[in-house]
Length: 172
Figure 1 (spheres, one colour):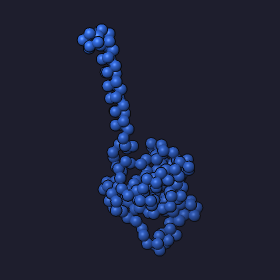
Figure 2: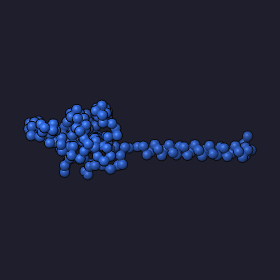
Figure 3: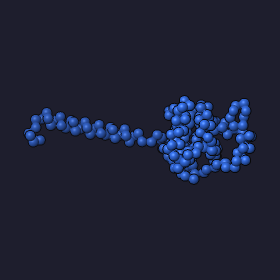
Figure 4: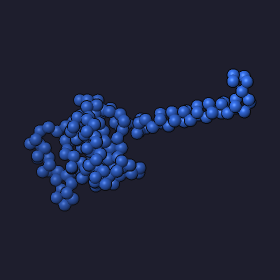
């Protein structure tokens, strides 16, 4: 039967079905596009993270850790500084982890994952419940991200308490 010979009811059903399918596809596409990215596009860094200050003098680090240690609280001065705003900020570069020490120019201190997880457990969180902010360099490895998230989860810090901006910091 040609299109012109179909009863009016069949024509209306065909049009309705086509319109319904188009609407469902449009809704799915909108949901899919809005799902990309976990952040709002805002970065916490003013300079894009181009300044990397890493302490690489082992003797100075040893002296600093002796001076920074606080036997009563179990936290070094650096760790206290990192916990000041309630959120521990970390950086993953390749497979290494760094504690971000806030300041005019942030300092990235190499830190074992176990220490980062311990600090994250002591973070109070911000008004949104975020306790850990994970920054990544372009060189960060997916395995390092997965391992860190798993260690945080094992310590009772779920994905809802972790913020990882979708933007990557340039490699140094």
